[in-house]
Structures are given as C-alpha cells and as structure tokens.
Amino acid sequence: MDNEKFGKFIKKLRKEKGITQKELGEKLNITDKAISKWERGLSFPDITMLNILAEFFEIDVSELLNGEKGAKKDIDIDKEISEAIEKYKNIEEKRKLTK
Image (cartoon, rainbow, N blue to C red):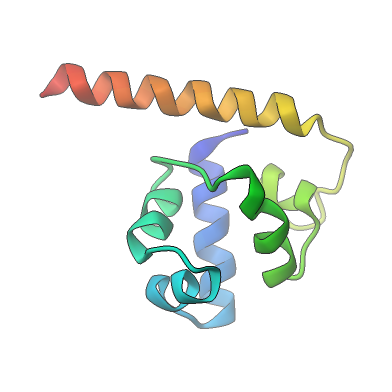
C-alpha cells in the first residue's frame, strides 16, 4: 500500500463529500490531526477503521486500500497492513534522525 497514494485518495474522497478534516474526524470519533496525518501519508488508520471508512465513502475496502475507485481486486489485508506499518516505521526513523 502506497501511503502517499492512500492519503491523496482519502483527501479526494473527503473533498468530494464536501467536508473538512474536522467534520470527518467528528463522524469517525477521531481527531482532525489524525485525518491530516493520513492525508499527508504520515500514518494510516487503525485496521478497525477500514470498514467504517469504506462504508462512509461508499466504496469497497479494496478500493480504499488501493487508493482508487474501481480498483476492486482481491488483496491480502494482513500483508497490506504489515507493509503500511513498515513504511510508517521507516518514516518515523527518518524523522528521528533529522531531529
């Protein structure tokens, strides 16, 4: 899963709904800062949020994880989440080194 592509897709879907990060956060019971991090590719939603996000944006979870509408295909969710976690860890390590 490409963290930047995922983030841009979330942002696009949110804007299509005409809502702010704060409004989306309120609907999902999370902070607007978490939404911002998703959209900038700095973090990913908790795995428990994937179905909720997909339902909210009226798309399939596979479309959500692939970062585009119409991209329904069989995916290994565990593998995708593991890869996303690794990418996030690498981002965090790089951030720590630059401080």
